[in-house]
Every structure is written in C-alpha cells, then in structure tokens.
Length: 80
Length: 222
Image 1 (cartoon, rainbow over the protein chains, first blue to last red):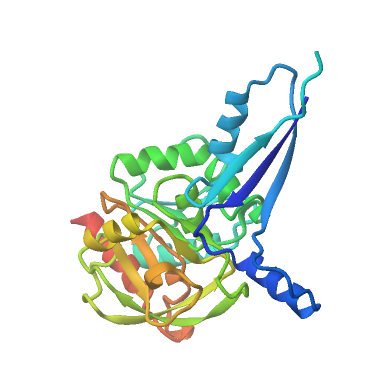
Image 2: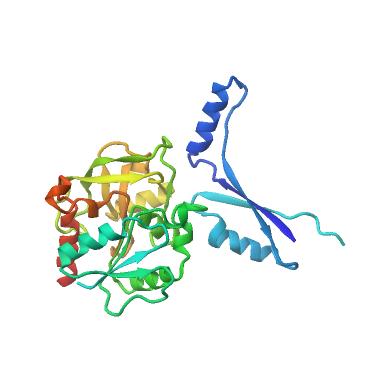
C-alpha cells in the first residue's frame, strides 16, 4: 500500500526557495508566473491496513513541522 | 560543573564546545552519543552542539530531535538542568519541542559565515548573567537555516516575558524581529544561532563567548 504525503509551507510563511525559483523563471522569460511555493513530496510504502490516523501521526511527529508546515495525505483508491 | 555534550552523526562543533566547557569549568565534559538513552549521573549542563546532524535531512535538526538521547535531554530540561543548543543545536531543540518556533532557510538563501554584532536583551538568565543588559557583543555565525520564525502571538510572548536572550543588531538571515537566541519559559533552556564557543580565547579575536559559559558556571554554582 502506498501513500503520498505533501508537505507545504503554511500560508503567510515566507518561502525563500519559492521566491528564488520564481525569480529564476522570470529570468528565463516566463512572465506569467504570479507566485511559487516549494514543498516536499514523501512517498511511503506501507503495510496493508495502515490507518489514516497512523499516517497522520507520522506526519505530526516527524514528516512535517506543524509550526511552519501543513501536510496533506494522498492514498490511491483501494481496490475492492 | 559536570557537563555533557551530545554528539550526533554530522555534529561538527562538538569538539569546540567541549574545549570551551573544559576551559571555563576545568572539567572535561562527557561526550554522549545520540544513541544513548540516558545522560551520565549528576550532569549540571547539557550542550547540544552545532553541525549538520543527519546531513540536515528532512529539516535541519529534525532527525536528531527524534534520537534516543533527546528524550533524556528533555527529561533533564524538565528537571531544571540547563540546556544550551548552539546553531544546529538550536534547530534540534526547536524540532524537539523544547523551544518554540522554527529555524528556516536564510531569507537570502545563502550560507552566512561571519562575525555579527549582537545585543544582550536579557542579562538575568542563567546563561547571560555575566553580561550587562543591552550590552553589545560579537559572536560568529555560520549557518544556512538560521531564519527564526514563530507566529506573532509566540513572538509577543517571548518579548514580553524577556525570553529573547540575544538579538542581531543588523539583519543577518531574515529572523523575525532579528531574534538570535531565545529561552524556554522556565529559563533553563537557551537556543541561539551564533557560536559563543568559538570566541573564548584571545586568539579567537574576542572572548565575548567565554562570559556566557562563565556566567553559567556561576549561576549553576550559586
């Protein structure tokens, strides 16, 4: 069973890397970019039956720093 | 004073901190590997050193904060044992929840490595007793993730409770309110990005850092 965890900076938290990427895109001539935010994708290969609550616990305890980051868990639809 | 320095894979200021502590306290600190689950008996000060623990994987200090020894450090802090986290050590203490806020990538993205002027904002703490309030001192910084951030309510509380120990005189890394070092609510845990242990001997150019350890020694002995 696979799950993907997306870790992103909270709104309002300055994202220097996103800013730098934005500037670089502008430098390449892409003028239509309003804003860039950079985050992380963490892919987990989990034992079958791992609960959503357990994955959330992993996020809170390690994968995200909830002082500055949000997380979102994505699981592929389980086949019946 | 019996002190301990925690050593993680990737720590690189552990020796500097040990030398500074021995110089000031006259006793070699115990070097405690991160896999230990206990600190040596009778430890009166714990130092969490600078470096790049676990290669800064995931977030600076994130992995180290979850290592076995940090539970023992947390227990010691809860008993009132002074704990100082310098640079990566500060990042570890915030990740471990022993200090509020977080240390993010420097606002200009570049690694900052130079001497910086600081103001001692609180001279009443265990760690700053040898300084005068408002005194300007110089410590070196060497970090990539020193941009201290917390929500406004936390920042206001830190300011209001005198828990901002050191403040940069100039903008160094984008830190909220130019915060360089903070105390926990009990006042026995200090985290700071600048390196006092690197300025303890005349050959270092200044000995401003030495007084931090001297003041601490006196506070602990008192």
